[in-house]
Image (cartoon, rainbow, N blue to C red; front, side, top):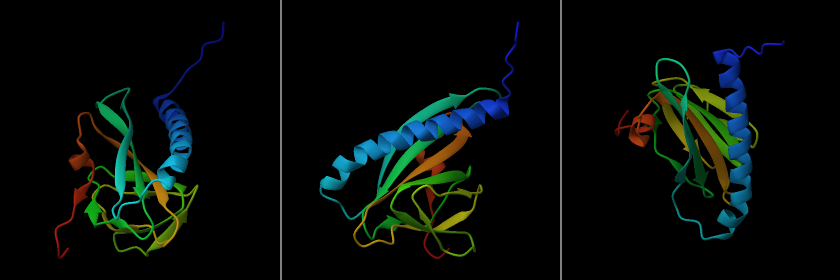
Length: 155
């Protein structure tokens, strides 16, 4: 009899890949109707998934869809637990810490380490909306405010 062994690392990797694929498919399917509606002047956030991960310490994987209408962005902020970002559509301009500003197009991803200042997060296009998925792994029960903290002026 064959015994299948699954390590925590392979479980987390395979689960994350499956979650990203499902969330991206859901986001892309919903984007057609979202793009046809009126666009506001601000980005919107939608919780896509929150799942408790196995093992200790207790942690949740949270997937958040962020839609940037053309020419909009987020104010500078910090992700206390770090965050992975995956661009579903359009282009996102991003500057983390003292690094250079970079443009990420659909299918690209990046990592922001815990405590890094996300100085720029915006859609550089004046005509095309952009969507990203923010992937957080944080202590169970972390709130949206825990995951993304706005910076005070002057920092």
